[in-house]
Image (tube, rainbow, N blue to C red):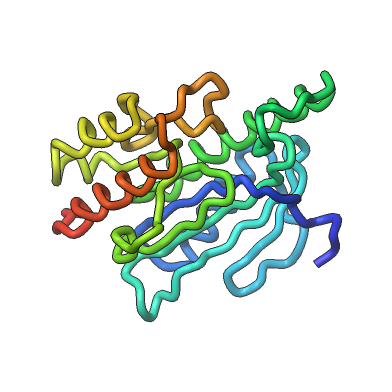
Length: 219
């Protein structure tokens, strides 16, 4: 792939785990990205496609779970994070700040559009985050980002999930798409206050979500 069509690190990752097959999830996510202005930049490979956004530049979409061994499909959208994902202490020029906010708006729109179309079980936005199958959420070192979405079906299965996640992250969720969203990661909401120990919170959230995902979820 040409360097012109590669996002630059650190990557902002919009990730989701959903029921369905990889083809349907890929198609739905491409349409979600089209809805926020991203257009195909290359032919689609088996489980990967490159798009370009006028606001965020090159965007890579890929499905990452093997359907032969997993009951869900994971999808990741990679966006350049050299501005939006960079350290807060770096002083930016006015044009860089404006560009950073355009990227933030694209990420927000892509996240909402993807949740609306794909209807994930859970999803999130994080810097250098890697989406994992539900069965791996309890593994040592696995974490969830501070910008975390979960479906209303999970609240129906376990009504204590929302208050537990609010305690973990120090902020309650709000209605978002067909579920709820907590914003403490600093990507979706620039003014969000992060947990005192973000990585520890992300690991605790992963284990808490694993508990509810181990229960049967009605379709």
